[in-house]
Image (tube, rainbow, N blue to C red; front, side):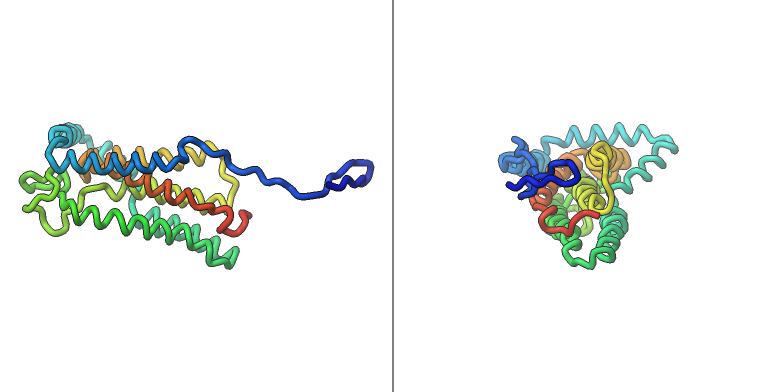
Length: 239
């Protein structure tokens, strides 16, 4: 390394070492295996009726606690997991903004990755398990693989909860290319939406509580897959 004196100061010239993220024990693939096992276990227990008491108990309690103001607030907060909002409007707007500024097609990749992962997992699971919503008047609506369920019964797992995990993670990836996001804000963006959506979608009887728990496992699994990709190396530099 060369040492140069410029205007009375010492400047070192040479290769600059860019610090890399330290590996954490949570980076292990074993955590992904655990999430798959949790999803499989919840599905198995629900299919065998072992969680029926929990699901029905939670449904009956929330339906007995429905003041008008609480229902309105829950409906508004539930949009944090609404696909058209988080995927098309927020993620789409950030992607278009980056595309206009950088004219680099690679900014499309986070959104495309999220869309493919959610499309190839949530939809097939819903169609396979064939479970109706808690608000349904169908007999035994809590059952998985219910032969009486109508063709559009698609409660398990909760797509809203998966969206709240996956798409807010992608929103952080894209927004960080445009602005310097404080770590506290990033934590709130990553944690608050899934927790809020899990509570509101259960409270509104859109989903059984086990729908939401299974969605947490699936969403975290997909989120880990997305964040294993080195987006700093793929995306154009942050502005």
